[in-house]
Image (cartoon, rainbow, N blue to C red; front, side, top):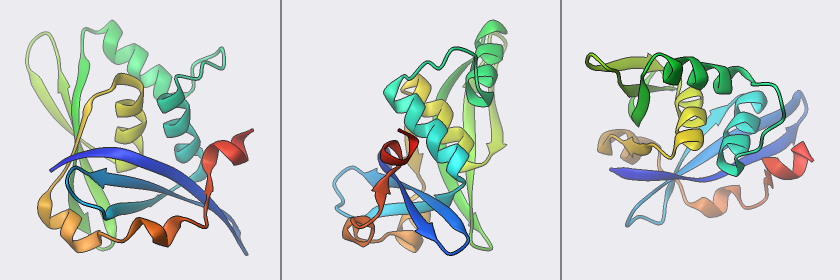
Length: 147
């Protein structure tokens, strides 16, 4: 299923900030919420906004190295759910071949946000975790917290 980053939200909890990335799917109102770290949420938002803070952060460095070696991110697939943890596959084109790398969804989405790579969700994964977007309306956009 073709997807896109619908939002990156954060909430204050008794133990600190909690972050969630909301993946929207074409032709569906529901979203797939994936809870991630605050640093990863910030990185995804920076990638979406093409924010350059001077020195490369981890995802910028990873992308720079990949591109320097002739590779490029083709697409990200949220492909599974393993004991309440989402799994993603990072599809990379290299000069020699295509490679699929097991990756955290948050890292994969941070790279996709920087490259405009396609995002996909396996249908069963979406069906298992889909929720109404209104469930997350009370959470702040991570950009408001970053500022």
